[in-house]
Image (tube, rainbow, N blue to C red; front, side, top):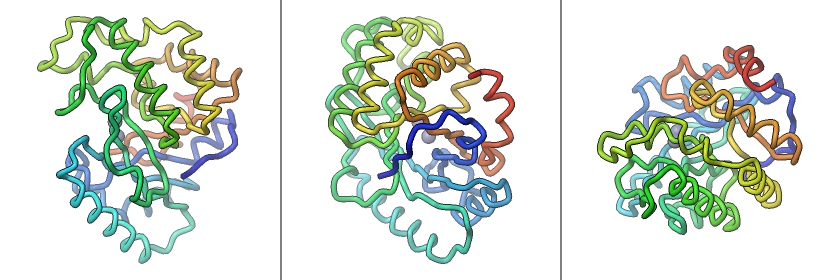
Length: 255
Ligand SMILES: [Zn+2]
Ligand SMILES: [Zn+2]
């Protein structure tokens, strides 16, 4: 469980990177071993990082996940660094009331939840597959997820890249159509709920490039409300760990 008081000082926020995949995530580069991740963060003068490997909706993967967490904790013991390390996970809210298993009895320092991996196997799609249908599905899922009090942060919130890139889903609308459907009120209500339950929203530095206007809108609404934002690069390689290399770009988009 990790929560900090909201701050909107991007120089402070960019001293963290709370979304990093290790080589236990199949999609990350083999170089992403915990030792080199922490050393890269240290060289980049980061204060805190979180490793967040994927947890799929499927319970048959549970043992593998438990073993990888155990291994990460053992390796963490051997690393001597001032960088604070959170051993977390990127869990799956794969339907309106469907949450991956690893949230009750598995000790996690940081529970990052993905809601919009619609391209992934096992993810439940809304009946109405229009942008508005997906928007309503996102609202219902995030509302239930936050109210269930299992989330420290929502990963890459509101975006539709995975959805619109998927050849299999073939949704037939362009990237950005779903976030464009959200009213300020709808975003604001979710940010308010997050504040109430101490769930942060991620400023995902990848998503920000594709959705600069939406990210600014979310950030400004959150500042009014008092939402906590956490920064993550969704790093799959060592060169993406240093959040601070993106600080000028981040400021240009958000401020
Ligand atoms: Zn993700
Ligand atoms: Zn990720």
